[in-house]
Length: 232
Image (cartoon, rainbow, N blue to C red):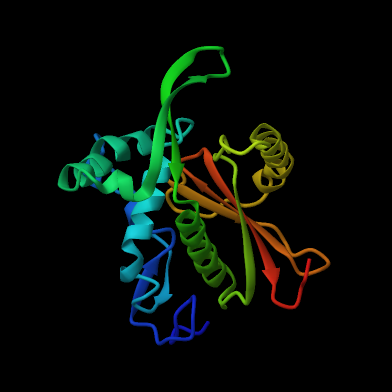
């Protein structure tokens, strides 16, 4: 494993980057139990650009994850503590991450309705953070940098402004239902599974590797690692 250069580029490594970002993991002071959920975290060698200089992008990911009402109580506590502190320090912070939000009613499986918000995020920034995490996990898991393209798919996001949004959301849900059982059967890596786990599928005949990053037991981001010499 080459620790001399950054996990994302060929620049010299100057620090260790947490994968996923450290801010995702609740601090002990924000948990009623005082539990340490920042133990045994994954880190990879990084340059400054791909570590400290992307802190705002990392914060975006935390904001996005706390919006998923299907997440466990730890994600909600992040919203009531860490996110609230950030907003109190900078009331305009949500505007930097969300272009607009609308109140909606969500229907649970039991048929109950709850009040929620539908927010339009800066999706390109979300993809950028997800791609960084994907590259970091690959480096950690295989001991080498990934050379190729990462295709990202998040099962907790919806389209609601495009003409074919209903069809797209149905397709997304169908794909998620198909791929989820395959990852459920694989080993789940991660020392703090209530916050984050990941799993890897073995490479297929064309060298493609699938991965799932699961946050707060409900938010799944799927990754297809497409090798550089594969045009699929």
